[in-house]
Length: 186
Image 1 (cartoon, rainbow, N blue to C red):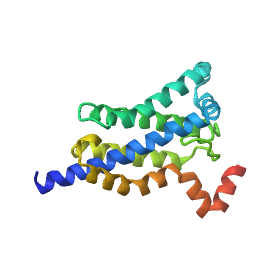
Image 2: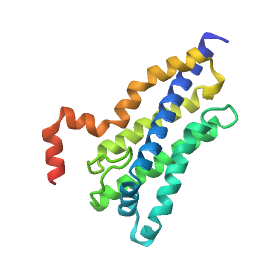
Image 3: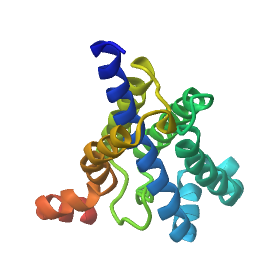
């Protein structure tokens, strides 16, 4: 392996870890607050399809749980990245539509957070989508195809990013409570 290919595998592995851990967290926390997530899907959905909120919510959770599984093997890593990108684009379009309509839907992306969906959620999805693209254009490595030490290091390096992305609303609340108080009041 050349130095360039080592670097691209390293970047890809780290990006895959970040994406996989974020999607794993999203699916698990949605299951813990299933009724809240179904309610958010209902509020996000156009009136014509709102009756399908429960099955749509179930499919979303299953697809999110599938992403980290697909990132594990060389045979399925590209499918996992494509699924992650597709979900992020769909989520972003739903958020933008909710913002356009003034729906005031609460973020249930990672469970029972209480803040309304906003531009920060669009930005978070954009960061995740760029991470998926970075993994895809480097050298999708499949998490099980790299050595244990490299995988452990990639997980360790990606964890701060995972924490920031997953806890974004809480971090903003911690550092800018007055801003969030105004958002909650409006």
